Amino acid sequence: MDSVEVPEVVVLRLPLYVRALSQLMSESIDVVSSQQLGGLLQMTPAQIRKDLSYFGRFGKQGRGYDVRFLLHELQEILGLDREWRACLVGVGRLGRAIINYPGFYRENFRIVAAFDGDRAQVGSTIGEFNVQSMDELSDTVIDKKISIGIVAVPAQQAQNVIDVLIENNIKGILNYAPVAAKVPMNIVVRNIDPVLSLQSMTFYLRELE
Image (cartoon, rainbow, N blue to C red; front, side, top):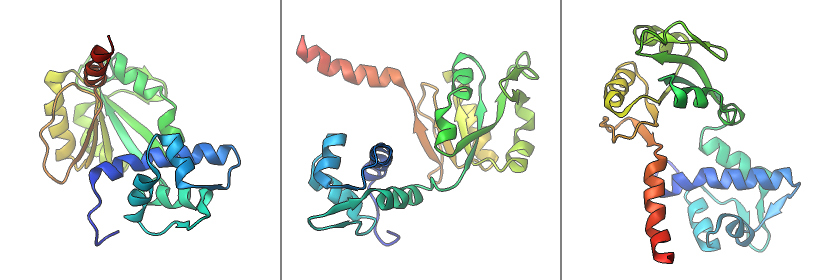
């Protein structure tokens, strides 16, 4: 894996494999073929075999994949075998929904601090968190070993917030603000924008009218 550059599109599909394999585990299924896995994910068996080949040989010809083993290996490849600590910036309606979303905790992502630039929000309590001032971010990132920043601020504030996170050694940013952030090459950003997804969806819906 170290000597082969893995296409980003393959990395983006790995969590889909993890989700499907977790579902199979919950159904007490021990072995799955690439054909069956492809049926769950609406992908071709050839694509699944090609994706997995970047990381090693996991299946046996004519037998398929050991579900438990493959799940464990992919979780390790994705770094899901450890806890990742995150901070949230922006505690408006979206930020509060993110804090209260239980899915992060189930997958080893733990929000450990919440910040806001609005003085009226600082000191308020949201769930288990006391909202902190942005001035406290630097010390908190170090003290709580935070490596991921979640940005839930208005678009006009997003770049400044992202710059502050990067200055404080945050390497991974989940950006909910509707803006394309400018970041150095060594920073990993994932943008979550449901409006863009809806706009691409309506391209196909228009064709069905």
